[in-house]
Amino acid sequence: MKSTNRSLAQKLSHIFALAVTLVAVSFSLSVSAQAYTETAIYTFASGTDAYNPYSGLIFDAAGNLYGTTYHGGSFGSGAVYKLAPVSGGGWQESVLYSFTDGADGGTPYAGLVLDSAGNLYGTTFQGGVAGGCTGTGCGVVFKLAPISGGGWQESVLYTFSGGKDGSHPRAGLIFDSAGNLYGTASEGGSFTNCLTGCGVAFKLTPTTSGPWLESILHSFNGTSDGSGPHGSLLFDTAGYLYGTNYWGGATSTCPASNCGTVFRLAPSITGPWKERVLHAFTNGVDGGNPASSLIFDGAGNLYGTTTQGGHLTDCSNLGCGTIYELTPTPTGPWKGIVIRAFSGPDGANLVAGVIFDSAGNLYGTAPSGTGSHIDGLVFKFTPQIGPWKQTVLHGFSGVKGDGKNPEAGVIFDAAGNLYGTASNGGTGGGGIVFKITP
Image 1 (tube, rainbow, N blue to C red):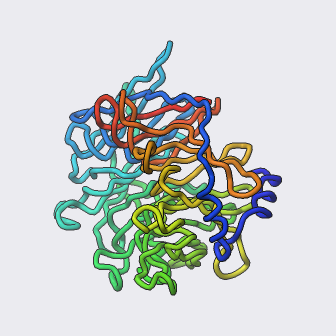
Image 2: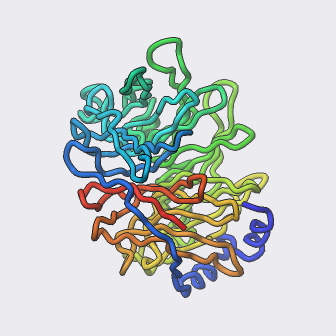
């Protein structure tokens, strides 16, 4: 974010301790509309096609889009797909790989990451070793490599056992500069306070041949430091990792350890990394149960979303979720700002993270809402005096071929258009890939 926008936001927002006033004001705001055009560039059909895309998209250098679906493919256990722009308009879909739910993995929640050689990497929630994790498999980390002459070859880089190494990864992966992969698994690790394990943050290091070597950076304890990481990790310039836990982080207002945390992992020369909890959610005005990944602005502040909390009189008295900002402090918890507490008509239960444009505006999705936005929406937030201004770029209706329930975030192309997925709806009923044009 530009420094002028950061300064304005800092002067005009309240920290979580004073957030009641901000939340109350935010609910008096009307939701504005703007002249944006949404187009379903591809519609998934239930059956052998890939369908139910819970993950977001990535571009390659040629302008092709890649993503995963939780269901469909040749074996019904999800797929990796590519959308290639067609000369003269339109997009052509091709299924690059269909998971069998066997040793190769199955049912991927997360999206993909691309290396400089054009290989794709991702995780699956299930599959792997037969019989593990109550017979569904504990999930894998996979690589897809393009084959000369056409087609793609899958290789399994790591298979989770469901023990101390983790299980059921929901999030995608990130690279470091040396080519190592980093990610989270939502279960496994420490079983002291969690029946199926509290989750781990892990690193995978390439080997000369065969599976990669896993090392556990941190095993969550299910109480003060959190449990159940759903989002991807994020590096800062100093080599620290940042992420969120859906559960854990017991506070005086959240004694059941079920409200979630934002954490930082500091590198260690040997052994586990050192964890610091930056914020423990209360399921109050600050939000609760974060499922999203995080993003930095130019000043080093973190932004994310929560699925619950905020204005507690809405969404069955659980709150409809928030967008929050965390500002660094030398020690202890970071200072927090509530950018938006959602009420339902403006969106609810945010699962995905947000992104910035060059002017400091935030963009994201809500998978549900109330009233005319019950099937979700794509939004923009603009810094201004008082609570940030929300603009609904598109409200999903599920009719006339439109999608429903965008679970993932959005990305920009070079021209400033937004792209994303909706997990349901469309003419085929299996979700859509959409484009939003200013």
